[in-house]
Image (cartoon, rainbow, N blue to C red; front, top):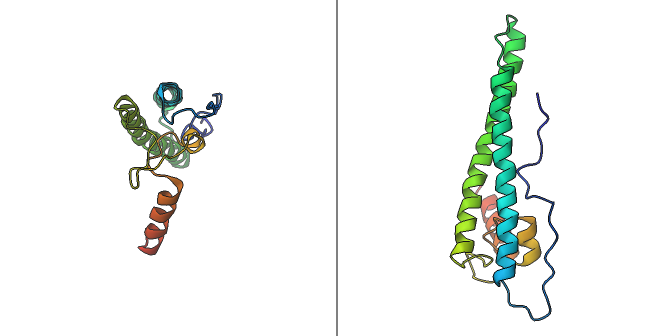
Length: 145
């Protein structure tokens, strides 16, 4: 059984964007930088889906021992839950790519301020600035999740 990896995290294989002094926020170069990060991340997730399908097909054994069968089924279940989370992430990546295409990327959905290049590099699908995200998490905690 393959060990779980960190495909849920944005790809780390990119050069951080270095804006020039006075450069306009979310100009064409910045949008292209984030488009490429998102496309690379999407590609990694799609490759992981393909690996999972192959693994499930290759490793599907009909064990005689119930304990072995249960262990295999639990492993498959864990893999499928992970892939389901990644499926939702792929949807979010596609929505974010649409926002880039519509020139509506990089600004907080709640208050409209710049989310910031470093935050977006850490979480390219972010839709809230740090302040609004913190506020949302506090509200969620107070309301019990």
